[in-house]
Image (cartoon, rainbow, N blue to C red):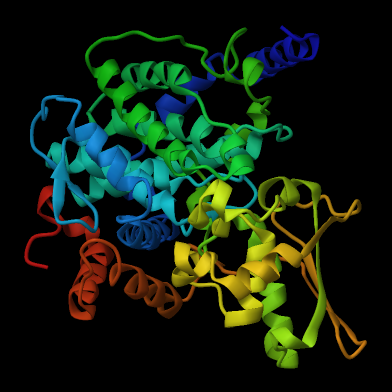
Length: 473
């Protein structure tokens, strides 16, 4: 073990002993166990409903994305027993056993990279938590109130873990942290008390996985990392219910998460626990692409619209971003080698070229045929991506520079991530996204049916049985 990690583990354990006699998992388990729906702030509940709409909508649109059918067929051919009532596969009209439904719905929700993101924590919590908790609530005929309570708690834990991280060395926070929120909230839905929830958290340590290598290579496994965490968290809760014991110190222990995987500050993790819920600060995405390309996409769009720029007007395109952003979206534009759709989602070059030619970056623009369209692809390959040594941001700022054939130099720098948080986004903006997404995928819905679905989610606390939610829509 590295000496720095050993020192960090000692520091963490010392801080814990000074703050509380409980381990971190016991503290979190006590909080999850004790928190009831009526104790949640109205803002957190409202944010949860908006996030449900957003996550299910993007899963609907992603239900026919590349790789999803292959996973579905692989699971179907495994010969595993159904394990009880089947659960809904969003946007398909099909069902699957509980754990498989959690995996597939998570994969579909993550597939188009249109899902929500906590900008500071760098965690896509919803694509882990909602699929796991929804499948469990359907399977066991739980209420909308129970689901909402568990969802608020799960997203809060995942985002707090992300906020507590010290540095970012290449782990994919969504999966390595997401499994803990999914495990603890699933255990709550299963009716486990503090001890059982703590065991679920302990078991989750052994499901921790996921790095940024998929983003580096633009491979399809990127869209499955959250799914492993969703299914893994649910499975850990089921293990705890069956009486399987697990470590009491999965976070701060000598060989725990904070020592071997990712250094975190326990004081940040616990700060305001139960008084402040992070789900209202989760941002709902404006573009179907990696968050690291949103600021530059916005900058390109502002330039093109403000100056009425046409592709033929531009001689040279430059993009200036941070080292972290370059790691995620600055690689070579090569859809033939890496796969067109994932390349389109994770390419600064393509984002700017797409905006220049089409004056948008929408769901249709990440379809393989549009990513590889000859003129746009040629333009994308010509875009120069530069690392700004003074830019330490992870999501923003980003600058786009057009050197015009006329000799003019036009530039735009966007300092902030575009879009709105789940606590602030305009209802009309969110609903427009939901309508757009749910009219796509394997089973597109009519506008009237989508409207009824929106109304039902808005009144989710009145739903007595989550297995009935889609009935009569």
